[in-house]
Amino acid sequence: MRELTGAGERQVAAIAARHGVGQEAALVLLHALAAGGGTMAQFSHPDLGGMGQWSQGGMVMVGDMFNQALKARVDALCRDLAAVLRGAEAVFTEAAAPADVQGRWWPGELGSPAASGTQNGMGYALFPAARRLAVRQEGRVRLFDTGEHRISGVSQQQGSGQVLAFSGDRGEVRLEGLREVGGDKVPAPAFGLAPSPGQGPSLGPAPAEASPAASAGGDPILLIRRLAELHRQGVLTEAEFQAKKTELLGRL
Image (tube, rainbow, N blue to C red; front, side, top):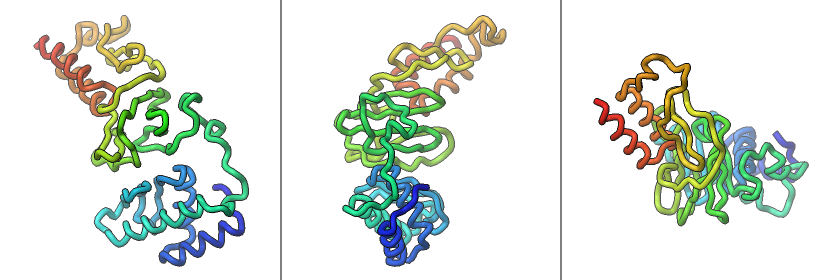
């Protein structure tokens, strides 16, 4: 973690004491806020209810989800610490390196994101001015047009699997509801899905070394289940999923 200036240490200690939490918990929140551009934070600390999220505008989620007093405390802590980051006094001993120096993975022409982080194993970077959302998963970068949505934070997801959704002025915003406008090409998954340029994967021919079942077309039900999983992850659009599902059901 980056070192605090003397003024930064005094301010963090005062805020921690004011809200009745340990200084270490306040530091975890401060660094999480710095990583989120001062408008959002993803954190994990026992004093804060374990894993949690906060975004400017009032979205607060903590591991102890029914503890309203804890939510209020975390919200107040984040607001006070965000104000410190925006203050005139330097909080850290060295200025943060530009985002494109700190392992930037999104297209350089988008500039610096208003918010970035990782949720459910997927990286994201938000660019409100350009109306773009960059998402990284397993080495692949995809770009989405956020349109008129004003995204303010990451939505908490229930259940297993890699799902990425955001909270906005119109409610929850899911990847499958956004138009994909670009990104990297990726190799086809092992079960025969091949990507098209600028689009999500589509069902393609099985490779020559595929198993006998795959070379014979595979089990349609199994393929539908795999396609459904890709659709749930946001890799396939609703239209692509339904088209392939209809095609596979025709084999039965």
